[in-house]
Amino acid sequence: MKKPIIYLTSAVLVSGAALGALTGCGGGSVKLEYHYYSSEVDELGNVIEQDYNHDLVYQNDLKEKGADPSAIYVTEGEEKGYYYMYSTSDPIGATGYLCYRSKNLNDWECMGVAYNPTMYIENNTTYTAFATAMYWAPEVIYDADMGLYMMFYNASYLYNPYKFYIDVAVSESPKGPFVQYAKWITDSETATEEQKKEWAPVTDNVSAEKAGLGAGRLKVFRPLLDFEKIPDGTKIDESWYTGDSIRKVETDAAGNVIKTTEELPGYMKVIDASPFIDEDGEKYLYFVQDLGDFHKESAICVIKMNDDWTPDYTQMRKLTVANQLEIGDNKSVTSYPNYLEGNTNEAPFMVRRGDKYYLMLSVNSYTQTSYSVRVAVGDSPMGPFKKLTREEGGWLLYREGEWMSGTGHHSFVSANGATFIVYHAHIDRKLGSIQGGRAFAFDEIQWIANESGLEVPHCNGPSYSHMPLISAEWKNIAKDAVVSSTNVAAGSDVKYLNDGIIKIHDDTTFVKEFEMDEGAAVITLEFADYREVTALFIANSYSYDLSVGRISKIEFEFKDGNYTGTAYTGDLRFDWNKYYPGEEYYVTGGTFALEFKPMLVKSIKITLPKISEAHALSEIMVLGK
Image (cartoon, rainbow, N blue to C red):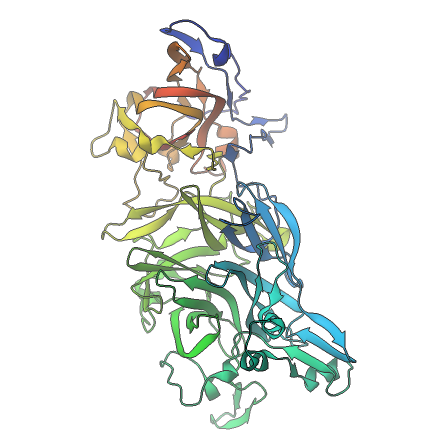
């Protein structure tokens, strides 16, 4: 029987002697002692989750609350070997930023406040950062040339809760304390007098009055980006809004201007700063022209930065707008009706691969279940960029079913030979409501050629499965094995079993699974030599109709000292309680997952029972060395 009619209770399976106790010259078989991950249900039918080994396995539990995560991997100094993460506090509106560190991306330790805005009193004058509230979306990058961690962020100006600017703070350590760049320069022993004068705090009597201070008694350290500083005569491309076109204008019924708001000349509401250093050392800052009084849609923009991360206002571009594959492509909404993005293009993140630049962005509102990550491609960091359609692999991360919701505003982080996307999701998985807050999640990224031959990023998620935790010690070594199988369906290939790619969505034809005809099958992974192995994960088909209900047994050809033999499991049932709860929905990417004492393995043989219909598996992952 492929699918159970009632819930099956699957206990932890432990049997056989420990492999370390075996002696002799080999040739025998032994029942493997292992831990199989399978949930149970109580008398009311509620799923009871097993705990898992956090050193080997992860699943996106959504335990650590926050939003807009920026993750980096530290490669030097006392924090070397740690992932660090910075985020918007949830609920939004906090002052400053906390930071977290982890060895595995799965379990985070709060390291306290990384950045608090400058504020102090000196000679009866208050000195303050331009913003003391509404700190959103920090993104951190390490600049090796400057020897500094750079935290880019947006926040609202004093007493103007929706007047946003972009700024940067700096630190010599990933845990901080970060100091506002303007303050850091004015205190620097190496900065020139010209630099100190440029970044010196300015008197703000308007805010002083609102604060109940006397004239001249409030001095403000200004933000990094201020579009009032655009040089006169600078030619901006036609898609850019500047000057009168971004001032608020009121007209009468005949269209005559009756009022122009002049208090914000050159102002643009901007959020979601994202820095990028290209291979040639050139620096760029991506950001979002946000929704507001002036703009009914958000757009992603770029500005070229100088070596010291100050902006070059003469080099700016608008790169994407909502519901257009390319800027000026006004037919996108009708030509690609499935590409609707609401009114949002935000949360940019840039990756270079070869000679291509991949600008990733989030679409739809962060409050919606459809908040998701998409991909645009260009030949230059300054663009132009063209968004990829869903069929081209342009939908990187989005909700499928009811186990994840609101998956977006991400960063990429690479370490230990793997790349991960770190993002936030709604804690309320099923209803997809932001009312329960947001929390951090992550999944592995692979690169795959689409049908045009263009490499595109592929996410093995959003996942809610037991997945291998790549670390400095353990990696997925399945790619090192030669795979063979009986019962290969016509047109399929065993190479799809260890290509590192798990098919989650039915949206692209170039992401494939290993397919079998009806009947039994034996799949074998053969290594060139014995490898130390400690866990095995087998991802089921993305399709409920093609999914596999059980595995008859798994056999490991192993050695222990002079002893060689075969260690085997019993029958393994797929965890329908977890991945097909109440026949409400099917969780794609669900895994048969087992861990065991590390052993030296030469081959792995997976035997599937006789199945009366076509079936498929998406991936086999072997955690080893």
